[in-house]
Length: 349
Image (cartoon, rainbow, N blue to C red; front, side):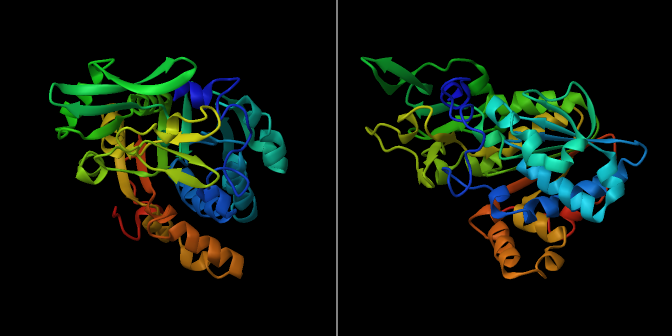
């Protein structure tokens, strides 16, 4: 998964500045139009007010792609909150060199707020870290429970072709991960374990000196993710806006076909991400569906525009679609403030 997605020469994300959208393989909330960024700006501006002791506020977007979301946020801030706009120091974090090269063009006039464009998080920052659909694309371990115990799924190359094989777990961290959650997989159940997400949130928490982290992604709490509902696992692939679900026994998994030419993704275990963040001193302020998060940001006023904006809003709120993306809001050094995004209803479905 690491090679197929991020290899600098053949990786899916490394070879293109943009993979989502109508001409891509999948869509995100950003592809719906600028409304998503405009609504996020409301929450970010409120967070900046809470951080008022600081003259400047770092806005760090991880997995920023070509910078479209930050561009939408900053344009909204320029229009309605010049004080917030003037305080922002933007840091775009993106693994793809091709996407980073697009940052000045996509930001346009808002490039004046760009402080850094890099593959890595800033060493230290005070403000807000935003990651929209990052964790689901981090490489995962896939495991399966057999009568002899936990086994891991490996990719095996033979005779110019790829296939999967089972073997002992590559690290004791996998069993420890499930034990920590109190999860007992039934025989035949598959699941994905995202150790990389845990390492990432720990690093992010340590680099954040004061402020907030907003994580938006699709996934579940651990009790739901590691249950009969998802007993086939969630590892899947997207190409030409078509998703291939978990493989059937005996089939070549779709995510193994055309490596480097398709997206590969797995649902996020938000319980483990939250626990890892809290262990690093962060406080959880909210965990809720994107629908309720955006409702708290005032979508009634956002809906007053033209038909195109109303359709965009409907797409962002739609149950079973973007609306059921999860939003995890974490804080450090700011207490437990009440946030607009948590003002409507704090609920997950």
